[in-house]
Length: 393
Image (cartoon, rainbow, N blue to C red; front, side):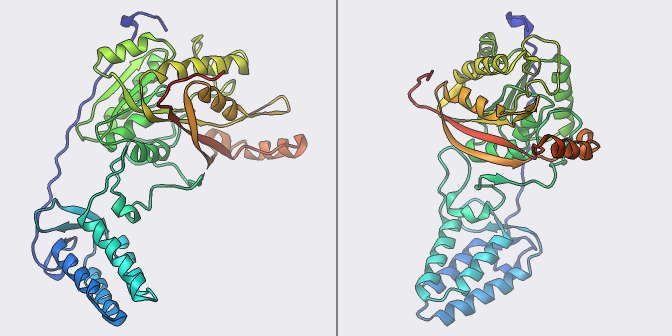
């Protein structure tokens, strides 16, 4: 794309949302099907902590579990006292009460009681996220293992697999929740159909996407507008080259001086050619040329990411001319040359797209003949920007 500010088209989408929660007093049995009195639960836990015999704790735990059976909603609202209402998973609460009840010793049982009590009376926020670490058992949908298996993509809202090369929304969802707080900025230098920005909207983060193709950027805008998640966050879409320094000037002109997370899902080299633009990575003339172009984008966007914050790179490998090309690891090295430390590598299963499904038998035959294995995975690299900048050669 060109180098003038006028070459960048931008669009801001600001949304707002209000949540109303009714406060209901009384014991669990006296409330609605999803509301319980926090003080009732705390008093019960205090009684269990003062118990001298394990049988007393078992009896009280069973009473609480029985009370919870009368609440039919998956998420409970804890109310009462001067504290703000708290949402808690019924399944998690029952599980913790069962752990208390089934403990072999009174010491272990009281350890679990204290942990549960902390979870509903004290808040311990993560340094770079909105996770209450005293309620860590509540976040069973946040992945912490290095092998991710997804049976299907999230198709809720306006997410779809209609755009070639887009990635599943579960990926940005996981990283946005773990590595940002509400109202912080997330940058996607390869916007595509807008998956990252739609997840930002749902999670009340501000999102900015850069897309080389004006046509694709229009698709992203339409998808985001159709998604309709209202939460007061900001959206910016810029048409331009993420490796162009002028793109950062445009961001600053728009009031975005820095971002707190970068999520990159670049087009692969020589697989799907998305455009004839000379800056399009998918049309790079060689692996070396691809890595050089990709490295320029990493270096340019490095400047806008806050120190100590994270970059996510989603990339797989490539098979060409009888040779496995470890494109993901080549790209990983390009990032590490530019002031980032590698924190984790996640291996994610790779489900076939509609177009590839019809060729599965053909690829299986080719693999048997050619002596190779068919791709069923890709990598997610997690990097942290060093607090002391320094480029490695």
